[in-house]
Image (tube, rainbow, N blue to C red; front, side, top):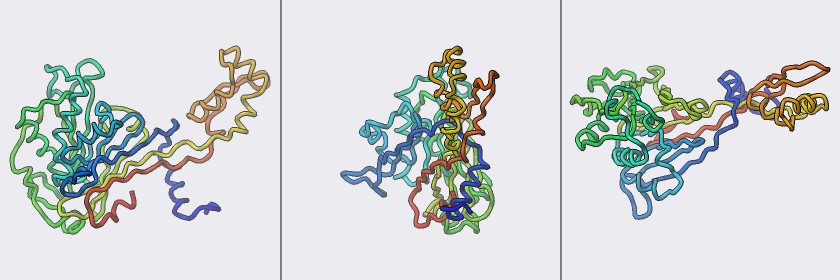
Length: 343
């Protein structure tokens, strides 16, 4: 065991060294509470809603009625940069604001080409390529389709609804949570949302039906990545775990991948700050050789002049062990959150 650390910390560092390491600098993160009231709003608090910013991307977690108003009041959450929406469960105080939120996001987007509706393609232009990923328990897709189709609501972007299904859900609405998960995700119940067939929305992409990693109680779901590349998708992973509630309910863990270790600046400077290398870098248009340290920290190899020969310095020669990433956990309504702990 490493001196000054306990066994749990050593285990985490070992896991970090085995996981893919992000060489770029950590993205800035902030969190905004949009609503904290339970069941009904109060004069001073809205029902459930949260906003997580990672870099320049915003993620909404739970979307009770009036969430779009709270976003506008916040003056910090940018509707045009909301690319992900997560729902913990389908009680109204956590999801009845979702159709209105999609309308708000549409007002901050350019519509996709009409001729491309429903094909899964994006036509031309960056604005038309916007995709909003929506994740939640089984039944969310039908709920969203019914409200958008019945109200003839078209979105100005593509969206994809990925559902988290219990292990034993047969897809016909007859399966419950399973005896092994009874009491954790609610007693056995039916999914009435699947009792009627609904067509896909014109701007809806084919969603994924995700089952937990195993049949065991507390087994987690690995949330599929956003369909479009981006800094958050590269640097963060998202998992979900069951929570105890009256209906199927989950909590989400947003986990940052490990970062490259800190650079040994003293050793690196000895190699890049020699007069010989300074003259060499000047000939290449680099006035300050210390800029090479930043490249090494970002995982890039650099070329220096040593003993009259060019040599390549690799980041692994100067970087310490990987640094653990951050974790942001957002839970729905629950009386037992023990299964979110391992995430």
